[in-house]
Image 1 (cartoon, one colour):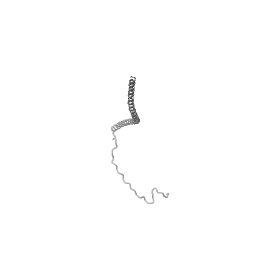
Image 2 (cartoon, rainbow, N blue to C red):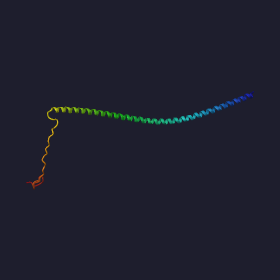
Image 3 (cartoon, helix red, strand yellow):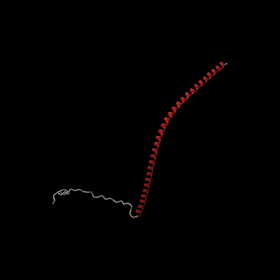
Image 4 (spheres, rainbow, N blue to C red):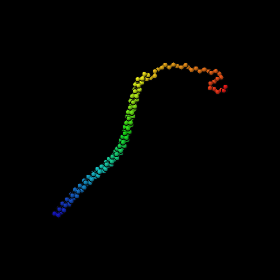
Length: 146
């Protein structure tokens, strides 16, 4: 009976060892799969970090470009406002000039004299004649005093 109990214990021990060995093999296989997945996740994380760095750089560049465009827009708005103000001043000056011209036209129209000079006939002058002077008397030439 002791032998049967010992044999049963031995069989139970071998069966337990086999079960534990089988379970150990399954756990090692699961661990290998988990390690492979971890390495893959770490590689993916490195590539994602590289992409994030590139995207951050692009974001900084786009922010700088946006700020530059905002500054250019503000400058253009200032220029446009200045041009509008100058145009308004020129229009006001033009309106004042028109009013002054209208007042001058009314005052001249009320006078009896015409506003503009009347046309006159132009008579040609007699043509200029150049003649030789008598000999011995040159005008403007040095000579003896008399």
